[in-house]
Image (cartoon, rainbow, N blue to C red):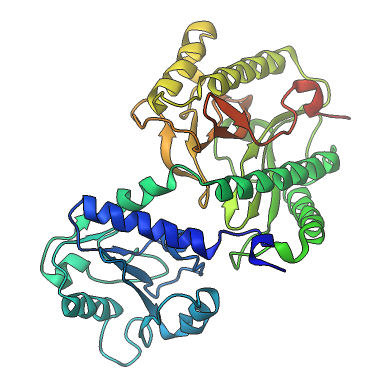
Length: 401
């Protein structure tokens, strides 16, 4: 099997990303950037790892030199994933492994020896997780560290053809997982059981179909996933699962996604168990109309705020349902479920071809239900393309009783 057959980003593309970041450093008159965010490290190197209390960081200089700070426990794992990259700078353990030295002091000493002066970082020190405690990088170096978060994340906004292909494949399997789940929903079933059983069945079919082309990038979760919540609980945009069985007359809000090469898709649907009521049909039609406006509004050259303003204008002026809005219209995503930028009134990022967004305006009726569809949408040269192709119409989303 050749590398081109594997469903992942190539080493050559990771190298191109680092080259682009080096140019950004030159433009910003910076000598070096330290990258601690696990997704950003993976984006730049292809090194995917389980982020724990042990600091991991990437150092990239304006000359293109790369150094990876790793605990010794990860050194072999790193060499296996990234054999083309230089040997890492390692430390024994967190908080010191008997060395008496905090891991970030190892990094600070390396930066001082390198003689770099103008330093940026995505975070001023390692991110606090799993009990980690540590000093700010600026405190250790006794100098300011520039905010370099946007230097990396702005590179991630526009997806490459390879990234788009992975997300398109993820959408196909998210759609498939949703279909398996919808077919399994019936009165009396448990939300958790059906969600997990459907996800596992879809994952088995996905792995059988893709074979060795599929390259896992995480220790947790499944490649194909589907879930739903039911009843009045759906009026909470992020409602948790309940242990009660599905009942006739329930509204369901679903979520499904695939993960391919580390990249995610997004699909959500509003469904009804049995014959819908007039109230349900009215709110469903309103929600679908709002999503239609969002899909039509997303095109290059506009700002995220302008897309949000159009959707809100429709909900406010045409529907008179402003009181039912709980969140903005959508968000970018790729390696993470939510990424910058956001379809929000206060985000004035200009939309470009190759960006990928969710379009998911929601209406939430207290005591009744929530109404939300979400789709994965690619910005094209002239407009947009929906990559998640699951049916959106009400007739296709009714659960028979």
